[in-house]
Length: 113
Image (cartoon, rainbow, N blue to C red; front, top):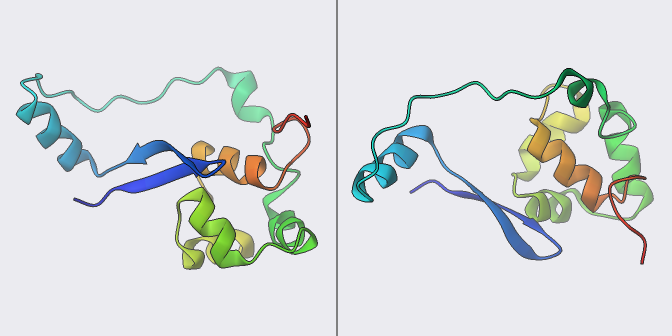
């Protein structure tokens, strides 16, 4: 099974798996197959930037002395995918953006306590 685990503070928070495998798990659990649905997000939530700018991602990471491999592992993506995000070749989904913002301590996404 191809499962991607996204962690926060070293603890698993999300498990992401391919749609076909999700459907197989539902079938094995005796749950009726679910049709794919488009996520509905209020417009205001989609216009708020999660990071100051993805073009600043590499700078934020390097400024904090975090290796690309360490950040990628913590967020639950491959270092090569993170490099593509940092170079602007890929746009991460909202969950990855939130995880990156959390791990990089972007203002408003991590309570200082």
